[in-house]
Image (tube, rainbow, N blue to C red; front, side, top):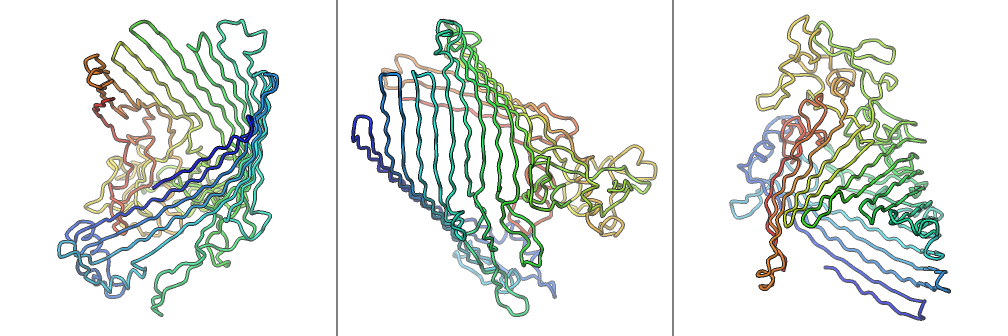
Length: 610
C-alpha cells in the first residue's frame, strides 16, 4: 500500500511553497516445504548425527520454513522556491527545504523440523535434532532507520547561455549517536553549464546543432549498513550448561563517521547535422575517504572484526556515448548507439592489515583484509606456480624464491594478477527499420579484468571424488607417472587428502593450486547479448476496432560469446560463489563444483496496444 499527498501554494508569482507526505507499507509471506521423502530431507537426515553415538537425530517428518516481512517507510518534505526572471536575461533559482525520512523492516522466520506435510500439516517433535542444532526455531529481526535533512540550492543563468549553481545540504542519521559532531554531515557542490552554441560566433554554423560544456565539484555522504540496530542476540546452546549464549552483534565503536566522497565531473555534449550525430564525452574523478567496512581485530578484544572507517580510495575514468542516424529514407532507417566506459580504481590509504586468504580470494567479501595501497580494491593476488615435481604434486615459489608444496602464508610471496573488475566496458547497438519490420542487434564487451578458473578440488587437497561428485574434464590430463610433469600441469589425485605432505600447515596444496597464477586468466570477452525481430500490425480496420497496434516479437539473448580460450569453456560473466556437490548442510541447490553459465534464451511475444 502506498500513498502520497502533494500540496503546492503559489504565494507570489515567483514564490512557491510545496509540501509532500508519502508513505508505503508492504507485507510478504514465503513458505518453503520439503517432504520427508524429498532428497533435501533424506540427505540432511543422513548428515544429522549425534556427536558421540553417531546415531541419527532426525527421525521423522520433513521440513518447513516460513518467513514473513513487514516493510514500511515515511517521507515528509517541505520546500520553498523563488525563481524570478529579470529583464529576460537574468534568471535566479533559489530553493530551501527540509526532509524527514523513516524506514522500518521487520522479519519473522520459523523453521520446523519433523513437519508432516502429508499427514495433516502437523509437527512431529525432533527434540534430539533441536538440541544438536542449538539454534532457536523461531527468529525475529528488525532494522529501523531515521534521517533528517536540510538543503538549499542557489542558481543563476545569464541569457540562457551561462549557468552557475551551488547546492548545500546536511544530513543526520541515527546510525551515529555517540559523538554529536558525527550525527550530521554537511555536504555541498558547485556546478556550471555553458551553452557554447549560443555564442554569436557559432549561431550561424549550420552543421553544429548544439554544443554544451558542463562540470561540477562537490561532496556526498553515505551511511551504508555499517552498524547494526541489534546490539546483542541469542546464540546457540552451550553443550555443558544447556543454556543459550548471548552474542554481542554490534561491537562498540564511538569513532565511527560518515563515509564521504568528493567528485569532479567535466562533460562535453554535442549534436551535429540536425542531431544525426549526437554524443557525450565525460571525465570524472572521485575520491572516497573514511570508507565504511569491516576490519579484522585481535581476538583479545572479544570480536573477530568491527565496523570501522577503514580506507580511502579514488576512481578516475572516462565515459563516451555516440548516437548516429546512418540512413534515413522514406521506407528504411538505420541507427546506431555506441557507449564506452573506462574506470581505474586505486587504494590511497588503508587502516587494516592484509591477509593472504583474502588477497587470493576472488569471491571475497572482506575487502579490508585485501586492500593494498596503490592497487585496486578488487585487486587479485596469486600463488606463483612452479610446476609439478617428480611425484606429480604442484609446487609454488615462496617469498624467498624457494619451491614449496604448502604453507606459503607470507603475502610477500604472492604475485599480483590484476583486477577482477573490468577496466573497460562497452556496448554497440544497431537498429534496422524497414516499414513495419524492426531488427535490433546488441553487442556488449568487457576488457581488462582477470578471472579465476574453476576450482579443481572442493577440499584442501586433490582427493579421489565421491561416486556422485562432478569433476572437471581437465582431470583426464592429470599426472599419472614420473615424467608426466614435463607435459601437464594437472597434478595427481591423492589417496589421502589429509596427508601432511600436502595438507598442513595452511594454505594447503589444493588451496594454493586453485588460487595460483596458473589458474588465473584474462576475462576479456564480446557477447552477442540480444537480437530481436518485431513486426507492427497497425491497420486502419484494427484502429476502427479500438486496437492501435499489434506487435509480434521474436527475441534471443546470450546467443554467442567470443572469449579467451584459456577459460576452458567457463563463462566470463559467471563468476558467482562455488556450489559444492557434496554439501548438504545448507539449502542451496547444488550443481557440482562449477559455475553456471549464463543461459541462452529464446522468446516470442505478442503485445496489443489499445
